[in-house]
Length: 282
Ligand SMILES: O=C(O)C(=O)Cc1ccccc1
Image (tube, rainbow, N blue to C red):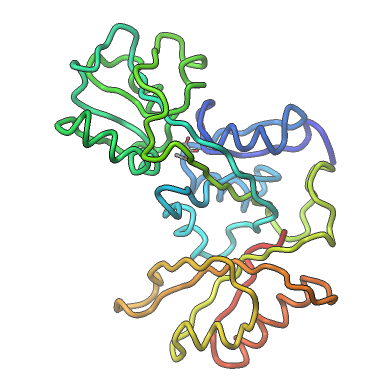
């Protein structure tokens, strides 16, 4: 399959960072599908409405994207097939004519509000902060407001006619990157030809949990190079101590096929009484 037959979901509307990441990965050759929330991107992928989805996974200032990891706790949410890293420079946008002193409320995705905490505390300490589904949804919302501003990309000033940029580069560190996961319905689903060829994978995402073992025992059984570890509470647990872990694995210098290495590592965890699932390979 190729070209415009291939549909890609992203957190919309047009102008989000997810949109830019999707475009960086797939360009003009595919058809784009706007989802209202990150959870809806996962759902569009899992229900085969689209062939791929792009979801934000982590930011270099604010850390892991909670909505993404919360979805990854659930069964049948698609399979991670790749990643894209995007440089992110946040702007403060208002309806044309609105002045900084008029602003009483600031809207954005919680990641963007978190990445600009220092700027907000210093310049808008009395404004209310409102989380919305995406940065471009915030831009759209302030089109009709005389006292709200949106944190979003400069691209939104071009996409939404009637907005202007008041401040640029307002995140807490000038160097700011967000990484996105590329999802497909299954491990075998076809991806456009531009994607890395099957067999060249070096990364994997796995989900781990155990009732009896602590995480160090689970990782000892896994016995793989872990380059990143995230933790979220387990939904079905009744207390605080039961967590689910997401480990990103990196291929070492073994010659055996990567998929086999990961499958064997998951088997070792299961054999020692833990739960282990493969959520991605790329
Ligand atoms: O809302 C967006 O634009 C997104 O794509 C989510 C997000 C928000 C802030 C930084 C990176 C990704």
